[in-house]
Length: 357
Length: 247
Ligand SMILES: Nc1ncnc2c1ncn2[C@@H]1O[C@H](COP(=O)(O)OP(=O)(O)OP(=O)(O)O)[C@@H](O)[C@H]1O
Ligand SMILES: [Mg+2]
Image 1 (cartoon, chains in turn cyan, orange):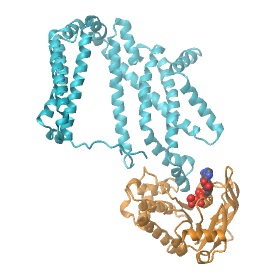
Image 2 (cartoon, chains in turn red, cyan; image 1 turned 180 degrees about the vertical axis):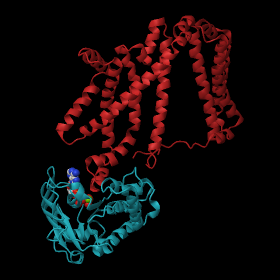
Image 3 (cartoon, each protein chain N blue to C red; image 1 turned 120 degrees about the vertical axis):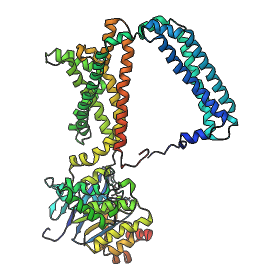
Image 4 (cartoon, rainbow over the protein chains, first blue to last red; image 1 turned 60 degrees about the vertical axis):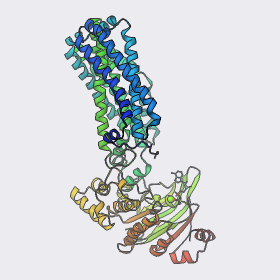
C-alpha cells in the first residue's frame, strides 16, 4: 500500500472567510474581480454587439468598450497581485495567507488572459471571426450535428461493449498456464495493439467488406473494428487487474470447492473489475475520440459522427466554424461519460477499505 | 471412510519447486478426531505439506488419499473433495468485496447449492459460534485481525468439512487477539471432535490440544509423537535444537 499524501485540512468555506483580514480579503476580491470583470464584461460587450453575424462579433471584439473592459480587468488584476504579494508576509494566519495567494493567482490569471486577448484583437479579427466564429451557419446543421453526437455515442458504446466481451475472454486465455491457449490470445492482442486503428478500419472496410463484397456498411464495420480494437486493450487491462489480486484469494476460493471458472467469476473478477475502472475510463475516453477516425471511411449523411459532421459542414460552407462546434461536441460527450464512470467507481467501492475509499 | 479407518494418507510424497526439494519422502496418516500439530523451522515445508493435503500444491511424486479416495488421481473430483476439507490461512484471505455473511454464504450458495434462506441461517449460526453474531454485515476491512480470522474459520466450517487445515492462523495477529482465535480452535477440537492438522508456533496450544506432534526439518518428518513425549523427551538432535530455540 502506498503512503497517504498529506493535504491541508479542508475546513470549509465559511471558516476560511471568517479568518480573512481586511487586506487579505481585499486582495482576494481584487483578483476575483479582475477575472469577473473580464468574463462578464466581455460577454456583455459581445452580446450587445451581437454574436452573429461574424462582422458584428468582430466589431464587438475590436470595440472601445471591449478595450475598456480589458483595461479595467488588467488594473484590478495588477492591484490584486501587488496587494497580495505585499501583504503576504505580514499576515498572521494560514487562511488569511491563502486569501492573499488567491488574490495573486487570480489576478495573474486575469493579466495573462487580458494579454492574450489584447494580442488577438490587435490582429485581423474580421477574417478570423468569419472563418471560425460564423455561428449562423451552424443553425442549418443543428439537427445534423445532434444526430452526429448521437452516432459518436453509439459507435463508442457499442465498440466498448464488444471490446469488454472480447477483452474478458482474451484476458482469461492470456492468463492460462498453457502456452497453446496463451499464444493465440497474445497474437490477437499484439496485432490489434501493434497496428494503427486507421489501418484496421481501412483494411476491414475497403479490404474485406468491399473487396470481398460482404454486405456491411461503413458504420457496421466501424463498430466491429472499434470493438475488435478495444478488445485488445481491454484484455490487457483485465489481465493486469486479475493479476493484481493476491493469490490467496484464488486459493481460498479453490479450497472452498470452487472450480477455476467459479472462483474467477465469484471472487477474482468482481475485485479485479473494481480495480480496473480508472484505466478503463481512460481507455473508453480514448475510444470516444478514436471514433473520429471512422470519418475516413466515408459515412452516409445519416451515419455521420461528430468528426465527419464537422468536415461535412466545412465542405458545404468552406468555413471552419463546424470544427469549432465539433470540439465542443466531443467535450459535451466525454465529460459526462467521465462523470458517470467516476460515480460508478465510488458506488462499487463500498465496503472496500483503502486510500480514498 | 476407508477400510483402514484413516482420514488422510500421504504416501511417499515428494515436492520440488524447480531445483528446491521441499518435501522429502513424506508418509503420513491422519486419523478421524485426531488433532495433528506440525512444527518446524521456517522454510521446512510445513505449509507445503498442509497444502498438499487438499492439493493446492500438487505433489511431484507420491500419492494423497482422503477417505480412501486418491486425490492425486487426475480423474478425482477435487472440487467435491475440497468441500470436505476446510482450510484457514495465515493471512485470512477473506473476500474483501463480501460481508462476513457473504463470505460464508458464497460457497454455500454456489458450491453446495443451498437456498438463500438456508445458507443465511447456517452462516448466522456459525457466526454465533465464533462469537461474531453482531458482525454479519461488516466488510472484512472493518474487522480486526482476530475477527477476520474467526470469520475465515466460520467460512471453512460452513461446508461441514470432515477435516480442517490451519496454517499458522495466529501468526499475523497481535498477541491480545491470538487467544480469541485459539479459543475457537480449542472448542472445535474438544467439543466437536473435529479432525485437524495445525501448523503453529503456539507450543502451549500444541501441548494442550494436540494428540500428536510432528517435527519437520528440510522437508522431512524428522520426529513424531504425543506432545508430552516430543516436547519433554525429544529424541532427534535437530528437534532438541529447535525446541531449545522456541520454548
Ligand atoms: N510456490 C513456490 N515456488 C517456489 N518455492 C516455494 C513456493 N512455495 C514455497 N516455496 C519454498 O519451499 C520451501 C518451503 O516452504 P513452506 O512455505 O512450506 O515452509 P514453511 O515451513 O511453511 O515455512 P514458514 O514457517 O516460514 O511458513 C521454502 O524454501 C519456500 O521458499
Ligand atoms: Mg508456512
